[in-house]
Length: 127
Image (cartoon, rainbow, N blue to C red; front, side, top):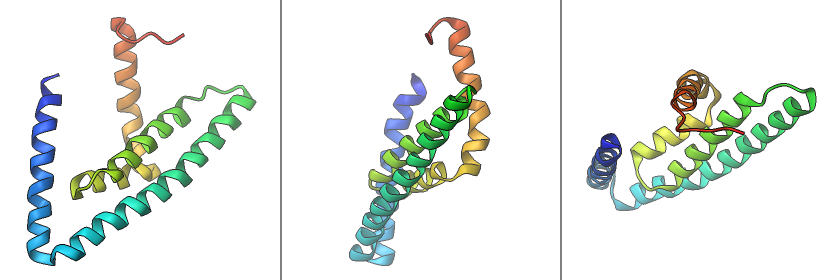
């Protein structure tokens, strides 16, 4: 919980600092254009990747396989899309990375471990 409070303080302050620096270095209009383009492009990429994750989920369910990786991919894509809609450079970089498959493959074991630990403690129940 402490890291969440820190996250809500550090990320906006860092984003604001970077936006001010970019505004001074690049100018106001180029900075606003970059933010708008990453938001629009990110929404488009998230939509495409999200549909791909849904198709993979359906294929795995039809084959009788566990749909674990497509669910985690879908959550990462959703998080990436949401981060791209938030104005700022740090959130845009993290959001774009979450839309590509190789960072999700790196994050997947960590996410699975976190889910397993929460299930083991009884704080997460999956029915």
